[in-house]
Structure formats: structure tokens, C-alpha cells
Length: 174
Ligand code: G3D
Ligand code: MG
Image 1 (cartoon, rainbow, N blue to C red):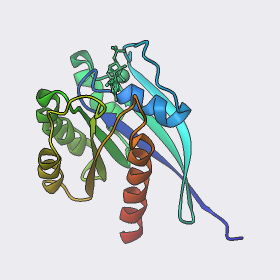
Image 2 (cartoon, rainbow, N blue to C red):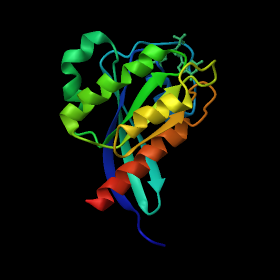
Image 3 (tube, helix red, strand yellow):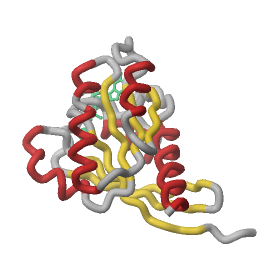
């Protein structure tokens, strides 16, 4: 039996308030959807092990409050991240349009890192299209996209495991 290569990676969730960041983390970490909603005050850090090939990655998942009030301190939260999940609400075009500035502020702090773009709430009627998501991904190196639902679980786990794969692939290249 081959020994796993163990590492720890910090990742952050970015995107407007109420797009479903906390729900996605909760779905991934505990496999539950909690409809009773709590505003994320400051930052929550959740840990979960993800296996990929012969790697065992302990993810430290930083869930940054999306509220405007936290704008000034965001860079502190981004610092040291190996990658990000950039989340919009698939029923709300404005949250998609805001992704660009979220990602810019992330890159300003940590440089170009793997990003998985998520159009969440895909259990509802979509406004954001597959072409929209392709367009934003094309503008970035080492990026992918998925439509997710924290509510019914669609692609919630894949969002995190795909990001882990991109992070490992990037580190292998260096
Ligand atoms: P945030 O962390 O990005 O601010 P939250 O977002 O995870 O707190 O979610 C915001 C609201 O969207 C919550 O609604 C939550 O239940 C809902 N939500 C999150 N993900 C999904 C999803 O995939 N599908 C649907 N239909 N709703 C989702 P409430 O009304 O509970 O405040
Ligand atoms: Mg939240």
C-alpha cells in the first residue's frame, strides 16, 4: 500500500452575500442543507480531508462574510490561499457580474491561483447560462466552472474536489 502525500491547503469562498457560500460549505462538510439562515459574521473555518490520487489534502475552508462591511479586511482573509471557489447565484445576473471584481481582489492579494467558478442555486430557474460561465472561465488560467445546488447537493462535493485537483496539478508543475 503506497503512502499518501499529506498536505494542508487553505481555500476561500468569494462572492456576493446570499449566493449560497455558507450553504455549499455546510453541504460539503456535513452533507446537510440548513434552510434556517445565519449571516456569516466574520469568517468561519471548516476542515475536511480530500483524497485525490496519492494525495491526502486537509482543506482549511475559509468562508468570508460577503457583506460590504468586510471589504476593508478581506485581503487578510485571502492571504495564503491556494485557490478559491468564486460563487454567484445562478438566478441573479448581478451576482455573476460582480464575480470579476471579487476575483480581481483575490488575485491582487495571492496572485493567480486555481479558481472554480460556481453558479449556485441551479435547482431554481437559471438566469446565468453555460455560455456566461464559459466566458468568465476563459479569462482565467487554471479555472473551471460548475452549476451547483447546495439545496439538492448537485455538484457540491465536485466543486471542492475539482479545486483540490487544480491545486495539486498546479503545484506539480512548479
Ligand atoms: P452566503 O453564505 O453566500 O451569504 P447562504 O449564502 O449560504 O447563507 O445562503 C443564502 C440563502 O440562499 C439562504 O436562504 C439559503 O438557504 C439559500 N440557498 C443557498 N444555496 C441554495 C441553493 O443551492 N438552492 C436554493 N434554492 N437556495 C439556496 P434563506 O431563505 O434560507 O435565507
Ligand atoms: Mg455566508
